[in-house]
Length: 393
Image (cartoon, rainbow, N blue to C red; front, side):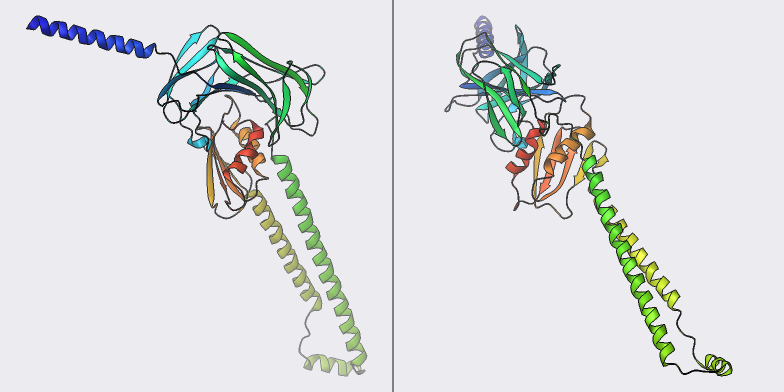
């Protein structure tokens, strides 16, 4: 009996080991399409590799995505197709195959997954043009691979990969793109080009809102001061003309008195108001009102300046309570200055109708945006920030 039990236990352990081994060695689900996108920014590039499983694939499904070996991971997760803040991160294992790092994970909620890593920034050439290159190796056979390099809108191609085209991407961006069909396993793909950007087109995300705000402050203060001076001059002129007219009228109507009679009248008459003192009081009041107006304007303008509090940077665009809030995950290159990053995001949001406030969290690499839902949508907010290259896809 004991021998039978031992044999049964050994057989069970063998079956379990074989099952685990077969599971670990199971081939990953084949992708229907893989997209490799490079966000070419002078402040640092971001490479996004996303794969999409064929419709009808049963979940959960094991899958793999590869990136160039040694790349710094920013995020990996499932793409649900809605707000990026709702895309769940994935638990993964890594291995190295040739010149690629392979991320393996299990999809449970969506048929699409994405891996985001740091990439090189565009190179500036001697003639002032820019050069950007995207390289990726397909470790398995793929029906279709899309390769794109995201650049500012208005970029003009000088030289590039044959068959690639420059397409408008909306929200101040363009994509230099090429689609390759029936890619064999082990094929190395490359997309590169040199391009020029017009002076009117922003090349970098390192925008600053400080200059514009300072100009606004100076203009508003100048207008307020001019208004205050105009009021003072008008009041002074009016009071002076009124004082002269009253004096002339009094002189014309008053009977002539002798010196003695004048003294007696002066003693009997109540003291007359001091017109000079009254005018001075009016001017002082006007000046005080003008100063208060300037103070109110200064407070109003500076209340919209970004406020730093620990890991968060807050910008108020308009007073009032936001009726809608959207949260976005960000792909911020490591080593980026939090204030500069926040200013770039805030600058992109200034033109969104109904913007109320925005809070950038440097620790979690995310931004929370408050806005009026009747004037803008979450898609509008996302589209406005897309040109910065900081929004995670």
